[in-house]
Amino acid sequence: MLPAWSSDLDLFTNNTIADASEVHEALGDDAWDLLTQLTQLNRFGGHPGEQAAADVIQDALESIGVENVSQQHFEMLRWTRGSSQLTVLDPVERSFDTIALPYSPAAEIEAELVDVGHGTPSEIDERDVEGKIAIASTDSPEDQRFVHRMETFGHLVDAGAAAFIFANHIEGQLAPTGTLRFNERAEIPGLGVSHEAGAWLTDYADQGGTARICVQAEHETAKSQNVHGTLGPDSDEEILVLGHHDAHDIAEGAIDNGAGVATVITAARLLADIDLDLQVRVATVGSEELGLIGSDVLAESLDLDRVCAVINTDGAASARGMVANTQSSEALGEVVNRVEERGGESISVEPTVSPYSDHWRFLERNVPTVQLGSESDDRGRGWGHTAADTRDKVDPEHITAHARLTALMALELTRADPPRISDEELCVELNEANLEPGMRATGIWPEMCE
Image 1: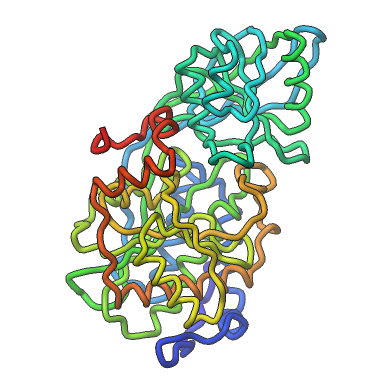
Image 2 (image 1 turned 90 degrees about the vertical axis):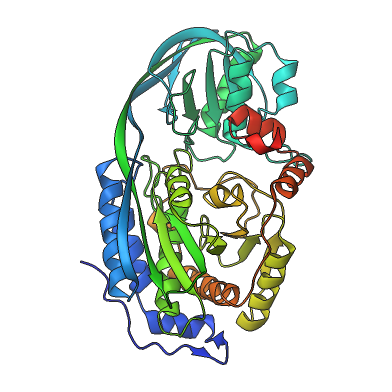
């Protein structure tokens, strides 16, 4: 059953909004009920559960007064996991639980194990990985930039590795997942293993051990979808608020990104009660986890000259504190400061450009973007991308608190005019953040920066 969204909230006064506790009381269980519906579905990109989630979202948007709601379908490469096995052959024979990483090809390989530490470019260069099964941790050195899984994989492919094993740095027998490539079949197989299995495998690698991996998987063309509609006047310009509704197939996807979707829709519910100066487009996109596919389609289909700014809620509401990644935009940093003042809550600001979520598809097309996430003591994903990403990890009050700030930010952006980022400025920011090596290895370095 769809949530019966609360009506006649009247929470905005004098350009600000009621405090978080009042908003949560007024909305009741609406956001939680939506999250419950989403987390009961296997929302993996291109599979039936993702389409079912889109239908739930469309009904929710229409029920709160969002207009012109429609689904936008597109083709993508669907990946379906089969069974996976990982067996150490030497110095002992034993098997470990493992899962294949999305877009891994089907394969059976026997090879020597090699430990590449955190999987940084320098660590890979220092080791002989050619023809071997390389093991890398999910975390990054504290004194260096964050190294994305796809960067490690790309460098290993270039160095001639036979296979990739991604070992969780978080204890608890949790194998991590995450795509190897963006919307294409990977060149070599990839597996995820728990922290505990990884500790054994690196020991065996130090002893010159060998292993056999077997992966069964299918790749086929399928359909994914976006859902979007509008609030406010039919103006010449608009603000876009979005989050991805797909999730990995091994988990409920509550943190990543069911809570983010609930944040988008709850923010839209709050905005539906006021007279907006500018149109706000509300969207959820599909197949983010497989390569930002839905957001790329949406960005290509919209008239981006009309889009003043984009708010991305990938990672919102998994903790009480909010982090705003302003993607190098000083103007968006000032918007965040005004939201802090009007909302009466602190928001941490991270200005560095990040290309691994849906906002990137708009930023690379020069649109100013901000990603709203959650404060964490861990640079990694925490429970995200593991089987532990479940509904119980989310606090419903965090959803309404982040939705409140998201609505305030959208409202503030309807009255602001942040400058667009030029190709030259974006390339400078990418280089200053030392992102070129990783983006080249991943295959997403922009042609304009050549």
